[in-house]
Length: 195
Image (cartoon, rainbow, N blue to C red; front, side):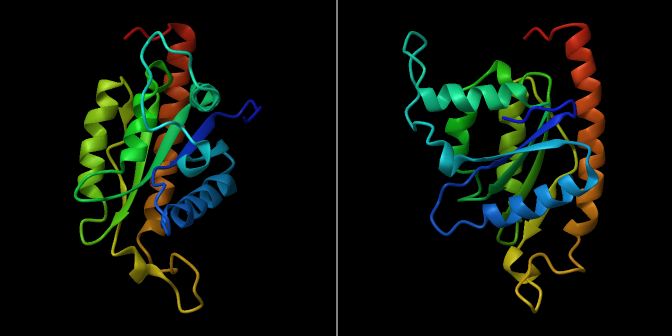
């Protein structure tokens, strides 16, 4: 878990599918975020957290991996969710990881980086906005959408190629995340959020 005075940005890789593209997108995004220096980055790969797919009852003991991820989410000041679109929605692994927690999401900004076929994952993002609204999180209006992301490889195999629009939109997203993270962190410190 990060230990710093800078705000913590948790970047969540939502897909656990074999052969997924999410880690490539997350690596690009975290590299851009680290270069700026606004945030301490906590990269959360749901394939590595091993959060159980079956949610426990309120009286059940919390599995250790759920408690560990919960501490990381609670320590975060902002979130960036990297999600593919599967059948016009987001992965079950991401929904389960979201549903294990409640207060950890409250009054914190959430940005989306989505990828997929022609829609670029925007159907998944539309549904995630509804989910995070229920959790009292603040979703950023702007989204980094990557339609037909396989077309963004450069000739040397690097991703994304220099002319890709995401190279510009990432700056705006990080500006907004930094603003919202500071504003909401200050507000939570001054007056704890009540859901």
